[in-house]
Every structure is written in C-alpha cells, then in structure tokens.
Image (spheres, rainbow, N blue to C red):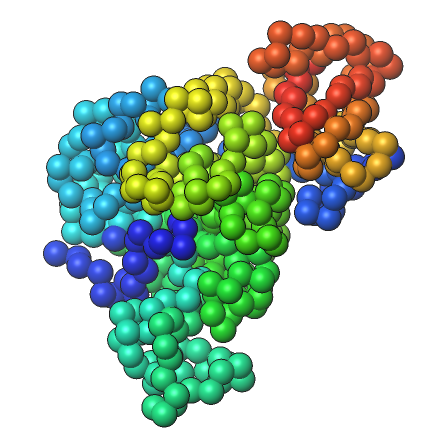
Length: 432
C-alpha cells in the first residue's frame, strides 16, 4: 500500500489453511485534456456474497485498521474494512460484526470457517505483488527460483551464483498470482477476489518494481488474477519530483486498469489522507476531495483510504487524529453515499460535453441520468483557474443545482458555465 509493505505477498500454497478543449472520451487525463469518462454501472450483483449489491451502497473502505476503531470509521462514512493485521482472527471478526462493519480479508483457516458469513464480502489477494520483493525473505536467496519464475529477466540483469541479488529481487510473477487466484476461487466462488497493485500502475518510472520497472505488459497478466483490481499512488505527499503534487496520476491509474482489463474487472483505488512519511508535504483536504472525484469520474467503483502515518511517529489511525482531514473525508463520504444510486448507474457518455478556453486547466466530467434527473460530476484536473462551459444534449432548460454548495446556475439552450479554481470539484443536478 506504500513503500512500507504491510501485507507480505506469498504464493497461496504457503499461506496457512488449517491471508477551447473539447471532450474526447478516449483521451487520458494526464495528457491535459478534458475527459467525459465513467463506467457501465453496478457490477456487484454478480457475486452472491459480494459488496455493494444494493444500488444505494458504494464501497468506501479503510486499509488495514484495528477493528476497535470500526465505529469511529463508520461515523466518518466508511462502510468497509480491507485487510486485517495477521488475520482474520475470530476476535477481529467478532468486533467487526458488533460494529456492523463488513470486511475484505485473507482466505485463511478462520476466514474459510466463516465462508457462509455475509460479514466477509471479498477475499484479499495480497498487496503490491508487482513491486520488487526482498531477495533473502521472499525469494529465500534462491537465484534459480528467480530464473525459473522470470526467464525473461536474464535479458536485463545477469543472474547466477556468482552475482546474487542484493536487497530486492524481482516482483511476484503474474502467473503465480493467477494460479493462487484460481485456488481462492475454487474454495469460494461466491465472493470476488481483490488484488491491490503498486504505484507502477500509474508511474512508469517507479524504481520499486526492480527489473520490471516500466514493463507495463505485466499488468494485463496480473489482472487475470483478480475480480477487483486496485492500486495505490499518493501524489499529495509524494517525495519524487515526477509525481509530487500531480494529482492526475490517481485517475491515470484507474484508466489504465480499466483499459488493461478491457473493462472486464471492477476497478478500485486507494486515496491518501495523511502525510504517511513525508514531513514536508501532504495532500490538503481539498486535494483529497479532488483525488476522490477524479477517481470516480474516471470509473473507479470503490475507494480505500490509507489512514496510516509512519513519520514523525507511527500512527495506525492517523486520519482519526486529524480533525480537519477527518471532517473533509466525512463530508466526501456522505456525499458519495447520497449519490450512490447515480454513481452505480451506467454513465451516459453522449449526454454532456465540456469545453475550456485551453488545455491549461482541463475539466473531466461524468454524466448520469437517474429518476428523471441529470447529473454531471466535474473536476479540474490541474491547479489554476478556468471557466468551463457545459452542454447537455437533449436537456434544454431548467435550474442547475450545485450540490453541497448552496447555489444554482441557469441552464439556457442546454448550456451553463461555471468557474473552477485549484483542483475544484463541482457536482451538478439538473431537473427540467
């Protein structure tokens, strides 16, 4: 989930069983153009015991938190736990059940004993297998094992007993992820399997992938080993100049996962909400809001907040100790829950278009129609200011309610305009 890997990825067999810019839909947000994105609708009824089956539910999770804080997270609009430290254990599941908090957890012996319990809504398939793994720990210092797993790596780095790895070896091979996914599904076909990938999904230059740095061809293969694909990158508190402050890396990864899976996998993503390890930079509450809506507008169907802090002192639940961020996250989550029926409905790509004076501050949008109302969700994809002109096709007049902002705009001949400042999010509802 960060460079401090909190869940170790192992082959499943080793786990204990007795873990003027015009909209053009195909263009990517990181290229600086306006986008009309979205997704095909609620995918969760596919699984008998999966998450979000009701159209009024939208998965908003928190990563690897102690069940004792479940009630506090629930009050902040969190409706799902992802990952349990060294779990699941019976005590952890009992505490989550008491709080009414569903969970995605490892399929260990305790988890399988609760196979018929709707508290568990999906199985966790490890964390960041696409990142380099320690040579002595994960790879057991065995060069021959690496050569067998990654025969193509010999093209990039000499291998052999006389040149052993130092520190980190390569990532987990996609074929192993697929193999273990099939084993998880064989034991329980009634729930989806979640795989969380690292920041290499969005950042080609990420050195943490070792020899597979920039090898994007790995990712379509990884995605064959899951039902729900997630990833994490945290530009607000990132310390590398290539990513630092560039919030659009978040929707870039969402778009890539959708593209690499041919939209056949459900896509989620992780959201930063603490400084993690950066003592100088962190995302502001407004930037977190932007990352959330960039993600949703580009087709993410579930969010996972990363609430840990490692520096200057470790705090597992740092989000809960930050009143300003917690208030904004709560506001964001409540608004998502209110809009869940729209978010879970199919997007209507030809319903709305947006133009801006130039590509300096592009605006991305997603359009929906539910119960006779038209929704347009919009976010500025860069810092700076711009004026966006929206055109609704087939909706001529009426009032535009700017949700959560206590203001309305006039819709004339199917068009309205609005101003955007740094990373602004505006959510519109039009009732003719």
